[in-house]
Amino acid sequence: MAEAPDGLEGAGFFATSLEKVVGIARANSLWPLPFATSCCGIEFMATMGSRYDISRFGSERPSFSPRQADLLMVMGTIAKKMAPIVKQVYEQMAEPRWVLAMGACASSGGIFDTYSVLQGIDRIIPVDVYVPGCPPRPEQVLDGLMRVQDLAKNESIRRRNSPEYQALLASYNIK
Image 1 (tube, rainbow, N blue to C red):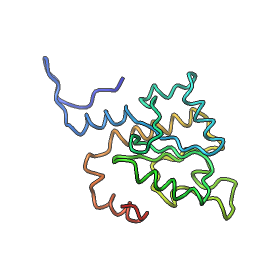
Image 2: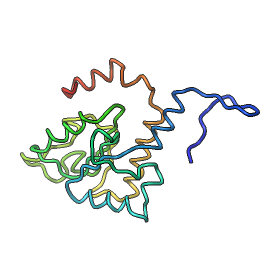
Image 3: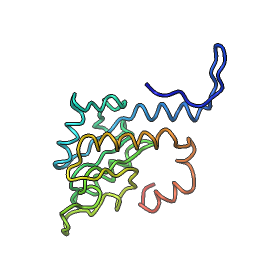
Image 4: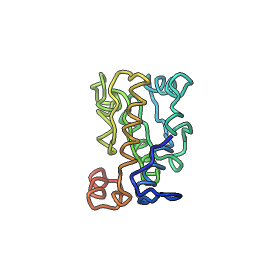
């Protein structure tokens, strides 16, 4: 259950800002789009199982359509041939959107320092949270999800329209 935001409380009423209510709703209803290519995908499947139960965090509905997702979870080795696909998936997601890079390969290319492997997805799209490990344990995935929830809860409604955010997207050549 989500904690109540700061506000004015009295007999029969509670008042707070719209921004805080929207933040709580966003944080507790993330719809992840798993983009799994290797062993990190297996760890994500374990996180979806009953032992670790990602649904406790409001993410029980994985979306395999970018237009219905707000959290892109990139897991595993991303070949340079797949980079345009990952970027296209990111661009098709509606705002607000967050990105979680799971594992050493998605974060930095991992042990594959070759011409064909992308050395971190932050070369093509902005990343909000990195989950280290090869492969990371389900507890680490849940911790990464909680970090995304913190970002979603505390983000200003107007941040996505700010010049700084527009400049960030422009630096990745994203419109």
